Image (cartoon, rainbow, N blue to C red; front, side, top):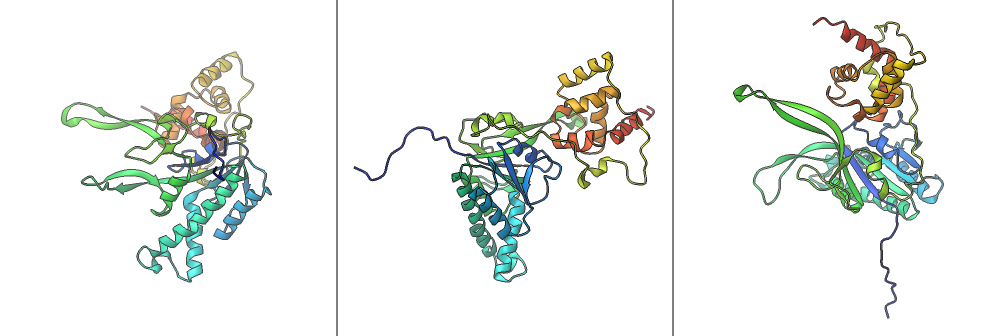
Length: 361
């Protein structure tokens, strides 16, 4: 008789998730809907979100210590979010260089520095495993970058999306997680015109989440999810322990942050007075219902209906400022962009709409 017990069946255990995608797509907002999340924000990107966070770590040792505090139960939470892995790796590289008393990672010689970084970064994953064993879900966010990839059994190379970490750290994260999710904008390229005058035009911009491997990106999941789902937490909520009982935090309007300030006029430009929305009469209420049916968030729909702003007019302003494609539906805008830019700075946004109306055709 064996001294080890044999178990069977599915085990209900905390889930370790890695989510990566282009900057600004809404990774932090997505992670904020996990059960009772606490963020370790290595890059300061959650300032616009109404979430719980630990102090921004200024060193690798501080980052590991904060993870240890969560494991001990000193920081009550249901999910620990590391935001982001590539910025955490920066702290790791600084620690490795300081320990060896070198100025940069390349001073170790060809490839040696990143080998040391891989070993040191493994300590973070070991610490996150202890957080999982303590009953907490873990989410690691990362930025995405387009890199060249060459298959050993094929001739030539091609571009693909990958995590914006070193080539040594990325495989550690891919192997470690239960779900490797890739978020991106799904863009359709169409041919316009005939013959030699035909041109390619991009349309779409809907945010989607990929859960399975593809030649152009890495992804995986252990929950039999569809290969492509909407970029919404509801798409994976059934896979996360505690998701049904957890209440997703409601974003609150916050003062605008510096990166989003360029949607507003410069200090030298004074926005023209804009009438504030009054209690909506019956006609405005009907217009608001139409906007809501198109997926426009309620607060934004109220402002648009009160000021007689159509979806096309708002999309035109957003497109001209270079935030998202002009034909991208408002319902697909990230929540933090809607709250932080469109709603918080509505008088200036509305003025841009009025200025566009004044352009003669």
